[in-house]
Image 1: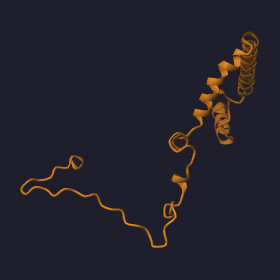
Image 2 (image 1 turned 180 degrees about the vertical axis):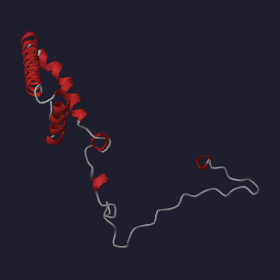
Image 3 (image 1 turned 135 degrees about the horizontal axis):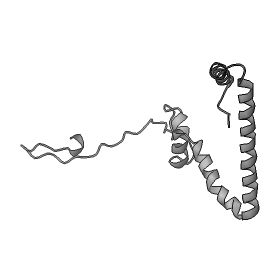
Image 4 (image 1 turned 45 degrees about the vertical axis):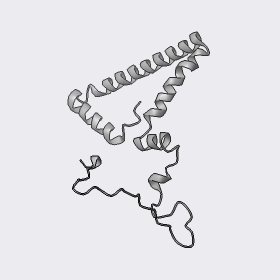
Length: 132
């Protein structure tokens, strides 16, 4: 629950508590907050165990979509692209672009033939829909 709260944030919270509540009431407020968190945790664990008893094997079927959501929660855009578009192969994103992907013949790379375009009629301007 407090996995993202570091020591610096805890120190700021304690100092803010000292300023707001004062040194007399701060220990009581900390005890109250800890007790409330403990009760909430016990209530949630009791509700989970009660659901597990009531539903039996169907409880695992309910938890499956939640585990899928948990997997998606930690997925970054790069990981999503790698998984779905590149089938998990991220060498395209991290690889060396100068290295050839296919072996080159000893004669060197062969030139790619240019597509032949028909000669334009005199007086007619060629229209390129992609350029507009």
